[in-house]
Image (cartoon, rainbow, N blue to C red; front, side, top):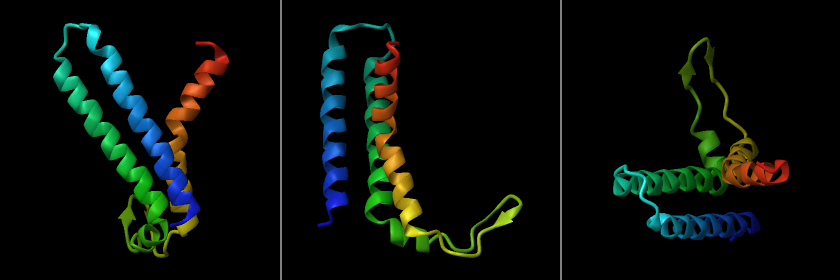
Length: 109
């Protein structure tokens, strides 16, 4: 297994552990909303986000090759996307929450 795949899997595992911890820490608070519904949406959102991020990182070359011929708006895509660009976007998606939290901690908000 490639080193990048292992690193991305470790980061995803850390996110899952922190998400489970945040759900268990927030059980004492009652916000008046249907908490099970909100928790369910949060779990589904995290799973989809991790699947997209890890999918782009792990199978970036294959995903880039599969985007030929898409037509959106004024532009038409007639060549493959480079695999490194798809992998880079996967890393951006995977690291964006950590970067956001780090930025907030640095600013002190």
